Image (cartoon, rainbow, N blue to C red; front, side):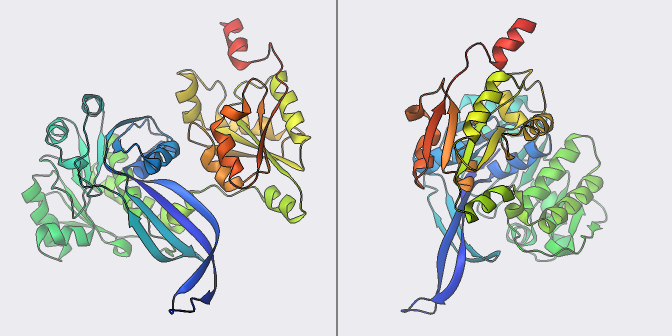
Amino acid sequence: MGDALLDVDVEGTVSRLCPDAPAPVLDVSAEHPRAGGAALAATMAARDGVDVTLVSALSGDEAGDRLRSLIGVPSVFGRADAVPVKTRLRCGGTSLARMDRGGGSGAPQVTDDMLDVVLSADFVLASDYGRGLLRDERLRSVLTRVPVVWDPHPRGPAPVPGVRLATPNLPEATAFSGTADPDEAAARLQAGWKARAVVVTLGGNGAVLHCGGTPIAVPAPVVPVADPCGAGDRFAVTAAVRLAGGAAPDDAVADAVAASAEFLAHGGVSGMRAPLPSTVDEVRRRGGTVVATGGCFDVLHPGHVRMLAAARALGDCLVVCLNSDLSVRRLKGEGRPVNGQNERIEVLRALESVDDVVVFGEDTPEHVLGRLRPDVWVKGGDYNADLLPEAAVVRRWGGRTVVVPYHRGHSTTEILSRRA
């Protein structure tokens, strides 16, 4: 739980400077929006296989709607004035500049549903991004009644008393404690915050954990760091999951340091994006037509097979956008999917009509479509193309949405109901 942000990476190439200033000109080639802040932490936990619910506050504007579509975990939201949007301009894996907007000045609204979810949780990760949600007194009151890992922010409040672990980085610990010595800062904060343990993270130098008594130094592996964004969230999520599973604080912190190093070695948040199928690039280089379709494809039946064959006939390659297991469960209910996503991927790729499969975790595939940019988006004839939310997305780059014939009597739900 905590402040959810909309992060956008605008990527491109630089080959010249502005004529009026020594500033690089970024020729934009792609834009990658993603859930940030507490929503990024929730995404990481879900990818680790944790049963996670996000508790946050979102605005009803375009940025809030866009962020809502990117969040691939069950969520309970209050109301915020404006979702903070952080846009990074990037070239060759390096950030040239960052633009921040939004955030509002009013306190986020906390609902009874949010409080109920927190109270029912086995464990809570409080991800503070300084936007005010964790200052709410009702919320802070219920947080004293559940086990909590607190990831603080210098513009945010102190953790509630009694947290299992607080995870400031060194600049945050310095701001809160008044000393830049990590050992002393950890000791002061543990006493001042009445926390069971405080760990001060030190980037490539590892971390210092204080549980009372002698501080414990946890070294970090040496890894190349191209994009440090998200490392703090990766650390806090791992520590929270390990503590929730009964690990001792020193073991949880050691695992969190190792997980953060591995996360950075794989490209940080940029590495979380699944690579696009090489087939798509090959077809585009030949001037061919890229076709995409999407769905759960839980129990493959003749209706699926016929639809996929019809879709493939519309172009030079077919990419299936497949709902993840968590996404299927949210859409179809407990007990679904019948077949896990790895099994569904294997079956789809075995079909002659399917060239590749891309998994997405949201309820609808707008995000993955923005990366694939197919020329044709295909759905079965039981849909109205004009009413599909994906249709507006595909139109942005000149693509079109079509429907292919629907074969009645063939549906996963009907098959399962006959077997019940």
